[in-house]
Length: 302
Image 1: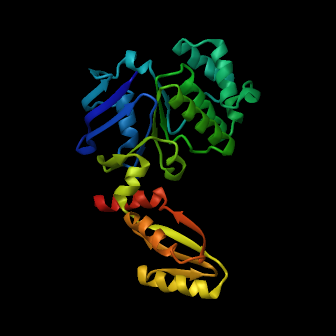
Image 2: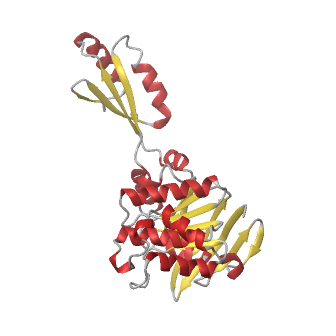
Image 3: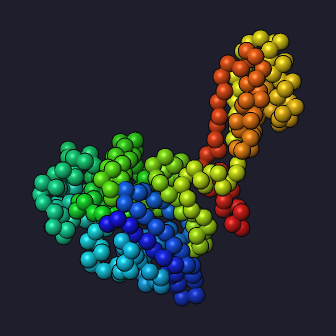
């Protein structure tokens, strides 16, 4: 699968519009995330791809319009937000069930158990699994057939550090192997450096989309610049005199001067203030967190 697109997808539940002409696209080797508050339509959009809800619009695979039928779904692995398995089955039995359904081998079951860190717990009943272990088992079930598209709905829920490590490793593997990952999540900071594109939804509408870098640029939130000054009062006075004229909002704490600077003036400001000979020991640029970018873009959407 080289490309996948949902084009102008709309979903209604009675009088309620769950999705209103939403379009998203994935390319081979990409990880894409859906962002938005509760009720934004993220999970509904995933269910459209899985053929679980009726919708208008188009599903396009490799440039050809298709349907979310059994042939398509054989190429998809799905981790739901709330994973649930029969409590009396062992982890090994659960994955063997999914392997049989997808035509995967016993060797693949053992490989996946090791991949998600459950080999030592494979013979234990699911009732004895922690929430994080169940989530890892669900991830294993989703990836058992090595699908072209991995769909993960709130995959970080309940995961400890070990579980997060497994998730990031699988995400990296899928991208490197030229496959696709579509993620719905609230954990913005965790996803920022792990996905290629982000789609921001609100009340069933697509607000904006782009790479994390382009979304940060679009939000135009000032960056913070910290100048660590040398412990010399004369040099500090020279620096502060120039800094206050360039940026009246500057704050001084101990030997560090901090200021908020529009992103487009960042280099200009650093060059201006770095020109005070010997005054600056170190410069640190702190970009706004993706959560602030998210809040700003949602605020503009009204």
